[in-house]
Length: 110
Image (cartoon, helix red, strand yellow):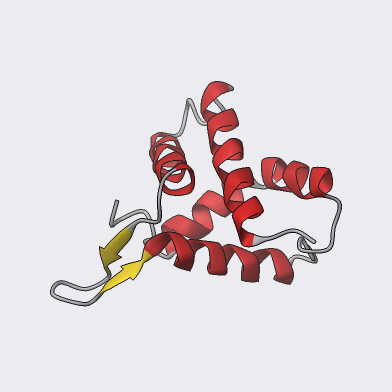
C-alpha cells in the first residue's frame, strides 16, 4: 500500500524531471510553479500564513491532501495501485496538477 510519504517523493521527482526536461520552457508561470513544487516536495514541510496575522499552517500537507482529492476525482486510487502507474500518471498530468496548486494559491506563500 502506498503512503503520502511515497507520494511526496514521487511529486518531487516529477517536478525535478519536468525541470530537467525543460517541459515548461515557454510558460513562465508553470516554470516558476514547478520550481516551487521542487522546493515544496523535496524539503521539510513548509509552513506559511494563509492570511496576514493568521495561524501558520502546513502548506505541504494541504497541497498533498488537495492532490489526493484531485487524483481520486480522476479515478486514481493511488494508494492501492501499482506505483509505476501512479508515477507515470503524475508525469502525464503534471501541468494540470501545477495549475490546481496555483489555483489554490499554495505556491503564493513560498
